[in-house]
Image 1 (spheres, one colour):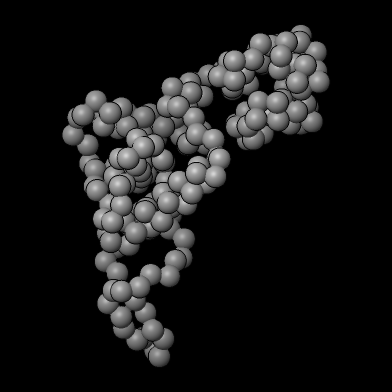
Image 2 (cartoon, one colour; image 1 turned 45 degrees about the vertical axis):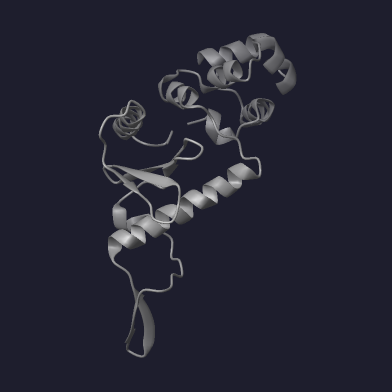
Length: 186
């Protein structure tokens, strides 16, 4: 979500918060799963009712976000000698949302880190993603500087935006924070 336009981020944040407050939102229970989909324009937010985990599934134009997948059990037809399966678009979108959510959940089950909503919201608004992650990891400037192999004043200058830091230094900072380089450089 960090690469989305601020207006789209705000719309998703507002809709998830409205759902959390119990307000009516455009939601649909996805058949055969514990998942609920909330539509926010062309974006989809998937919530697992069992774990209350919120997933933002690939965003984009409705027809353009789905990977090709093999489905079965729907209307079959043959066109120009090739077999095809016909699925109503809404059912196809539901199936793809469930598949994508399950892929994300599988990554989480094997240890992929998730972040609380408060951290994600702060990352939208912060002037220093490094500082935000450092605080989230409960590290001091000195702790992070030592872990990244740089001086404390240099880290402070990077966090304040006075210096940008080389790619090598930013990679070391990201590694010390246990995040991807993309998470601290937007």
